Amino acid sequence: KQEVTQIPAALSVPEGENLVLNCSFTDSAIYNLQWFRQDPGKGLTSLLLIQSSQREQTSGRLNASLDKSSGRSTLYIAASQPGDSATYLCAVAFGNEKLTFGTGTRLTIIP
Amino acid sequence: DAGVIQSPRHEVTEMGQEVTLRCKPISGHNSLFWYRQTMMRGLELLIYFNNNVPIDDSGMPEDRFSAKMPNASFSTLKIQPSEPRDSAVYFCASSFSYNYEQYFGPGTRLTVT
Image 1 (cartoon, each protein chain N blue to C red):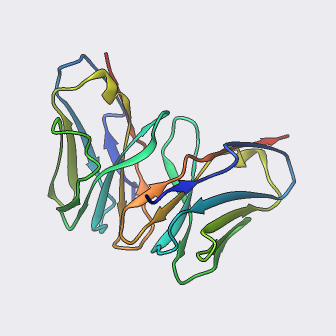
Image 2: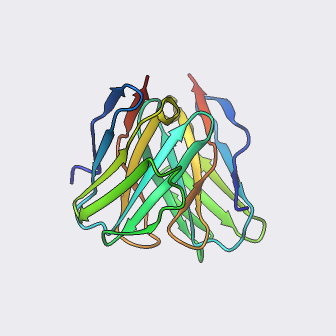
């Protein structure tokens, strides 16, 4: 069964620190991997999309990496801010357009 | 562009009633997805369309659920009859094409009493 796992489920970090969120998946034959953030009571906002042929993508203070052979992706957030507090979801397209989502990491940035 | 538009934003209904959720994808996007989010099961894909044609409905929980996409700018998800266990947030998402980013709507929070 193709699964996506995010550990830990919750993370608290002091403002200004750099941090890494983890995502692991069970099948290396993926088409792409997408990171989202979700604020309480809101929809999902796409942050970064990494194609199967890529190893990383960057957008502002965010950097996402992809290692298919080990079945892992990381989302690096530099110089964290209170506005970064949200739930971060990793989603993997295993062989087609269907996204399989992890259960997310709830991030709290402490001012 | 206004993004993916969903209506209603909140729906409260009684068990046994028919519920219809609506979605307008981003103009020019060819793929449309319906998801359900609950605390217990997280985000689950229910069905997706490509060029208005249903491609995979294996996530639809049972025959009480149906989805249509009569044209490129409109889709509906219908539950008939509704049950309390259908209570969840239902999201619609669209993407330009295969292997592109998916953009989510704000969701419809459904409560079935």
